[in-house]
Image (cartoon, rainbow over the protein chains, first blue to last red):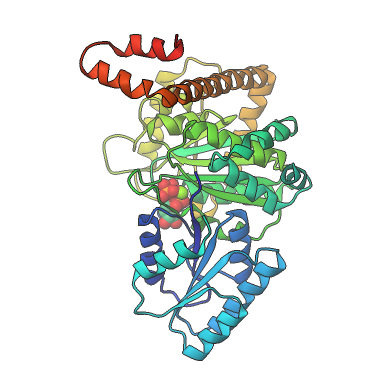
Length: 130
Length: 309
Ligand SMILES: Nc1nc2c(ncn2[C@@H]2O[C@H](COP(=O)(O)OP(=O)(O)OP(=O)(O)O)[C@@H](O)[C@H]2O)c(=O)[nH]1
Ligand SMILES: [Mg+2]
């Protein structure tokens, strides 16, 4: 039987992973397999992990404000590894214009601080083809 | 099959995808495993088991680093429990292995226990085969040592490490019957904490008491997060391999494992075939009703399913 696999990663230097953990648990409770890798991930580590774990979705939690450097790098590296089909979702405090830019680059979803976990679950379920 | 060719050529995405097919028990997996099998048997498989939080992942990380420095390639399979209610799982072993994430000589895969039709052990053995054919010299399999299922996984290993840590309690933590028998090497991790000597002594005593085989498992102290004792542990593993080879036990052990695996596969096939036939006719449900009403019993019903008229 197929299962949705999601990598929840926390790139960058900020030391908060409470939000990422809450999302990770919610996805698990929705029946997904969540690979959680902890703090301070580089884009290279994230992409390599996503490939080895054969995930359907990469969820990035970024609070440091570094999203415009980190996220494009992840998207670019995925594409370079013929893995552009992996859904990328970003959570954090991200201004609207940045969110629009990220979406144009290929990010599937951008979620602000007020987002309910159910919303994220539904988003992934509907974007990952069964 | 194209995926298998790519696996044998060293393509890690093909490796990842094949493992997914095996985990999903997808129909394509069987044919792939057939094609992969001739290329297996070269890796040394090391099982790492022990109670939650004992430091298994930290040890796997440092052993991986050690073997890489020796020029060997390493595959890691980290198994964590799936929720029996939702089927979901939080797989967090990689947190301790981040430094290995971008090493091209290392391939790490996290697995949930799921509810595999053919059993978790069989699935894990098939994932080991994929990594073996992928060319990994050493394959480390991490699992929490609870339940028969997980003990069965560990039996797939050539060398089994049982990891514990010092505790305040009377007994050495969670060294249950059954675990003592399967350990080839015992690791007392967190040797930087109090009560290490006590833990080591207790283990040594238990092992002396239990020692009726040619190999008396050594007890090794480590501080996994600091990388202390890793070389000693690797030496103990090497000594165990040497022992198996010298006594001719290596082949014997693998033969026993193949026997066991063939039986498991046979079991699975028979059950599947019988159930498929019975489902078409409602025979299975009818028999359950009859057993419930005491009109027949499980033995008679099972024979009926096996030999339908
Ligand atoms: N003091 C001390 N802490 C350690 C040692 N080895 C690991 N730890 C810590 O113990 C905790 C658990 O380590 P892990 O390696 O994740 O243990 P595990 O057995 O893989 O845990 P599970 O997979 O959850 O069962 C982490 O916080 C480690 O940093 C050690 O030798 N000494
Ligand atoms: Mg672990």
